[in-house]
Image (cartoon, rainbow, N blue to C red; front, side, top):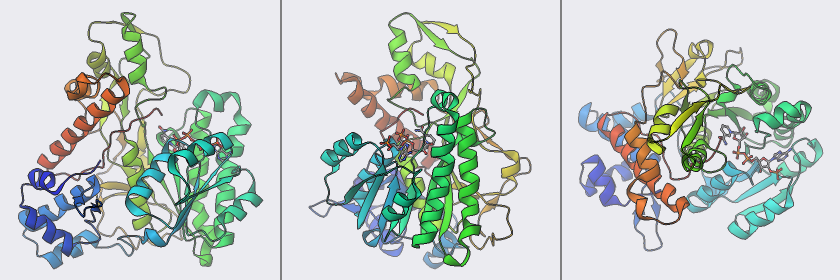
Length: 446
Ligand SMILES: NC(=O)c1ccc[n+]([C@@H]2O[C@H](COP(=O)([O-])OP(=O)(O)OC[C@H]3O[C@@H](n4cnc5c(N)ncnc54)[C@H](OP(=O)(O)O)[C@@H]3O)[C@@H](O)[C@H]2O)c1
């Protein structure tokens, strides 16, 4: 989702000329897309950065130069990546994340090429029809196949590793298949990236990898650990590795919203446990987190976004207030609350540039970046039940029945309503003077 300059000016309560001036002074932080007619279109990331700039200049009385230092302090690699000259390999490129990543990259950053690496030719065929071949090449391959992986990575600058087996029951039922794809696959990514001289690799992690209670989570935890240790293997070769970790991407496939909506017709909805809470994240946030990670990474970090939580009972109230609720008990491999940062990790985590950065605890980690990162209080954990950002029943209602309630198509209705919800979140955050997470209209199942 992007915004016209007038909208941004209204949100930030500064004139349009000021926004244009800040854009000129902070080109690495504020970089709106242009329409064919040359009109500026600001992303949520741009708005978040503008908000931080305003805060420093107007509220903290910093000069432009001081603000530049504050916004970049302690980081040796902040800034724009010259995406137009980057060749990217994206494992799992035909998945939900992968497709959205390609959409944003093509619309906004126009990289030299994105190589999709996945197994199923049909999904690649469908993607080719959707995205064409101007920016994208399609490689059939399995992350378990190290030779193929090395060949596909030749000449690549940046790797995003998104391929995974991620259905909890499927991983439980086929444990060694999950090990082969999620763990051996990560090892093959590391080996190939080092061998062919890739500069940066980011792998996607999940909240299920935090104190895992199912095999999916356990394999992802293992993958995270070997990705982070990839930096030690890489040594003087220079390839650097980091992870991003996030929670449920909520929306269409298999998520709780369509389930409750369907159950509503029966007069009864099922809930596993009344106490359940979840983090909510949008695909836009996931993609921007990865892109931001590439700008900041030193190698070894786990980047964790600050995202709101919701209570399952609130969601039930929002969707089907008139329905009976049947409590069916927690399912195997399910948690009541999700965690994104454990207490042990919290000791090594900083609040930096609007996200949490979990730093590794190894001798090779120099901590040269993140010097400006804020330390977290003793005993800090980041769990969905202790979040300081919550979606109320009203917020959730807007997701389901919001201003788009006139739309006939339920998907359009949901997507449009989420646009409004996200705008509301941005405004709330603007008002509370906090960093703004990126938000979007596309919410899918975990
Ligand atoms: N969705 C969420 O809520 C969520 C939350 C947190 C973290 N994550 C993480 O985000 C990443 C992307 O998730 P997603 O939602 O985009 O998953 P997805 O929609 O299920 O897509 C998975 C992708 O991986 C590919 N793939 C699977 N096995 C492969 C293999 N052996 N070799 C090569 N490619 C393979 C699939 O294509 P083929 O089947 O054609 O090979 C597909 O392109 C995963 O690592 C997941 O753990 C997701």
